[in-house]
Image (cartoon, rainbow, N blue to C red; front, side, top):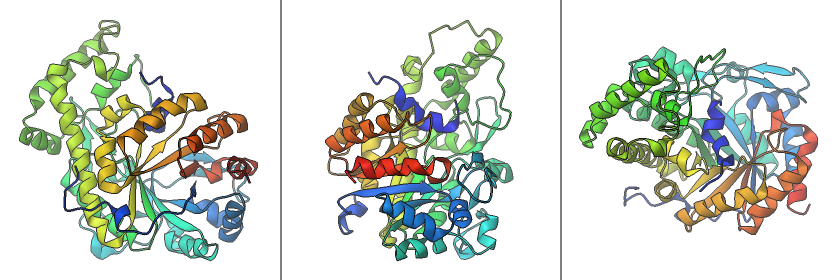
Length: 419
């Protein structure tokens, strides 16, 4: 299971505070368009295929916005319709705009080489403006191996003291300062919204190159192995009166026993719900408060720019619990959330979407859907999911991802809205 699967793929499983002075941003902005449809996209798509050619194609197929990857991780991607290359290896942990150096402290963004060639968020927005389309910034937050390797002291630390270099710790003040500056920098470009991926506690699984495990790890064991015990977490947990030492001892002892005999516990700790509540109940509450306060800080940092923040969430309550996400509180702070609806069956989508709607009354729910194969299932499945979402009154959508999918699949979007 890779990182994206952890963040969103678990939605396919059967599903059995803000500061008072901070007014939700949607209350001080003009109303959203009646129908909002955005395409997740990479800068190299726009550069290789041509800004205007892509934007024209997207608009013709019913898109009203692009969500440009503005701070992103590494990867190896297949680009089936890229005219210049078919396999793209990404530069790790880079930003796709020219940073304002004055905003940053000791941690500054790593700039992608495309920016040095004259491309970036500003140029993408200028072209989108010509087509009457909005520009949103897609930011991957606490998943950044390049920064983690450069500044290991800001990364998560296992119960054994091992650094998880791909996970920047949301408890760490330097991480919070960095992302406050990053979002202010991006907001200054006049984007309509900033979509926040991985703004949460993450986990052990990364999908790293040649990642190997020689024993089975169920959901509960992966959660324990990904728990952070760094000094920043220890300090915050102590202030919240969490018995961090007890949690760490249980985590170490349980994992050591599992490593020695993977069949020892059987189904006893197969999920987070089965972990001993007397040890973990306060920990879960505290981790949720860390993420909520982080979102609050970012909302305060960008409030003067009148830009919408849209944290990405899983639809599965168990995944939300593992990540430290309180959907209702986060939506109260930001005015809405972006839920990853990465399931194939429309009928399976209805209950979790309805649940999130009930958690965020009066706030904006944007739903992200897959267009690629085999993840989307296909045209029939896609149209079925869209039908369910429309019936639930959802009018804001994101689609994944322009450069990775056959171009003919874009027509599914237009068709889903009766075009």
